[in-house]
Length: 153
Image (cartoon, rainbow, N blue to C red):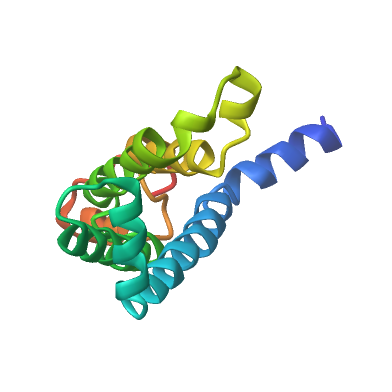
C-alpha cells in the first residue's frame, strides 16, 4: 500500500479549503468599504468640501455618488452578490481618486506601488476577474441556476 506524502496531503487539504481565502478577503475588504461609505455619507458636507478642493466637477453630487458607491459596493462585496458588476464602479471610483488626488504627488514607481489606492484597485480587479469564490451569494445563485463554473461546486 502506497501512502501519500504529507506535503501532498497538506496541499490537497488546502485546495479543498480554497474558498476560505476569497471569503476572508471579501469580508474584511467589503467591511472596510461599507464603513468608509457610511462615514462619508454621515459627513457629506465635509466630504463635499474636499471634492471642491480637489476640483472635482459637481462636488456635492460626486461626493454623494462616491460615498454611496463605497457603501453599497462594500455590502455587495461582503455578501458576494453581483460582485463582478459591483467592481466596475468601485474601480472607477478609485481610478478617479488616483488620477485627481494622489498621482499628481507621485514621481517614482516605488511611490506608486506603495499607494493604498493601487492595492484597492488590484483587489477590485482580482474580484472582477476571479469572482467572489464559492462562499458567496453569486455562487449560490449560479449553482441553483445550473450555471456555476467553479470547481468544487
